[in-house]
Length: 325
Image (cartoon, rainbow, N blue to C red; front, side, top):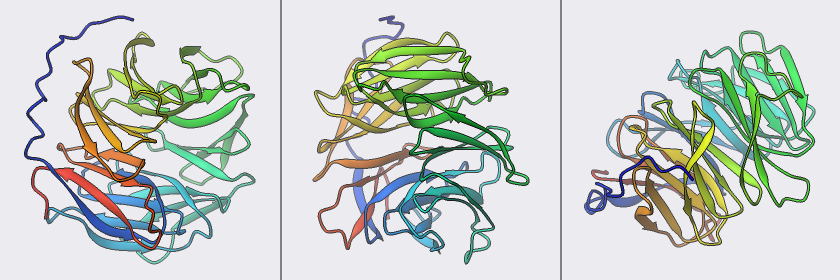
């Protein structure tokens, strides 16, 4: 493993005055959380079939939209890379929907799909939306007219998907048929040809579930069933270091706005925050349940996360930050 970072972390005392606060949100589990590019709105998607938009302009969370068009679990969502008021969601109801928070009653675009949709990514130029389904297809739609441009079928399990910030590479976290390894497939982000991947990256010894792109464009991180978070060099496509969760599957990852911190949601009662310039976690948030999703605000050190709530009639969103209302 290549080590290019100093050992000493500067974050050990940084979070002492931070606190977690919960905000009532959904009636069932919240599968996806994402901040828009300006960091003033947070979107949440739930197994209660709803998609909600929250304003952070007053220091906490205030609901401004409650979208109810989906007829099954909202699995994942993503904001438009340039327009902070447009977002896309995918659902088990076999639809992909586009929403405008200025039009709070109905989705503004809907496309019917053949598969049950699990994952979504928006290209950095805003022109293409990629959708992964439970049959291990990835479908690429032209955002302007929602015409299907290309559909790829993969042999192994397809999990999370993402373009890098340049749009030149497209990354797919996968699993071997046996589930004993979790390769990361790298495609040309423009041609999107497969077979003929640029590279297949091997590190994880278990299904690779999630991926996050560093907002500075230097790194990406992956998490897997082997309980490891791996940090990768985006230019060289090599692993730089890893962080261990000690026999606990990693569900979702998020980079902080400065690219220094990685938050890892996992199947234990401890949400870990890692400094990429350190070796171990620099802070842990003790939770009363495993975490479902996690998302750093793109402008400041403010972390949103959700848990597997025992009381399914009250599933809040948690914020971890210095000044919360």
